[in-house]
Image (cartoon, rainbow, N blue to C red; front, side, top):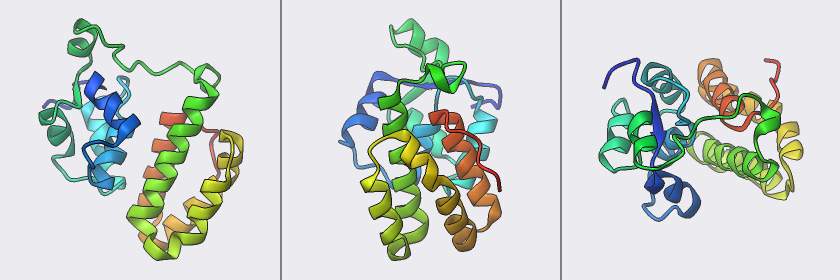
Length: 169
C-alpha cells in the first residue's frame, strides 16, 4: 500500500455501509465511511488515526474486499466513489445518512455511556441541517474525552465525507 494510492469502496463496501452485515468494529466502520475515492492512503491513514482505527485498517478493509484501488473499482463497473465537488452536490438523504452514521459511531467509540444524551439528540434529528447544529457540541465532547487532535480529525472526516459546513474550533 503506497501513500499515493487512492481507494474507493467496492460494491461490497457500499453494501456494508447500508446493511452492517459484517458487524465491523466501530473504528473500522468509521474508516470505511471516510473512504471516498478522492483521498490518498496517507490522508486516510491520518484520518483513521484520529478515529482510532487500527494502523492496518486500510489493509483490513482491502483484504475483506470492502475497498480497492479507485481504478480497479471503476474497471469493475463501480462508481469509484468519486466525491462530489461540493456539499450542494451531495444528495440530502445521503448527507444525512453519512453524518448520522459518523456521529453515532463517534459517540459509541469515544464517549460510551457519557454520550447517551448526545446519541438521543442525534436520533431525534430529521435532516442533515439539524445534525450540523450538533457538530460543535459533539466536537467539544470528543475534545474533552479524547483530546483536540481526535476531535479535529473526526470533524474533518465528517466535513469531507458528508459535505458538512465547517465548524469553528
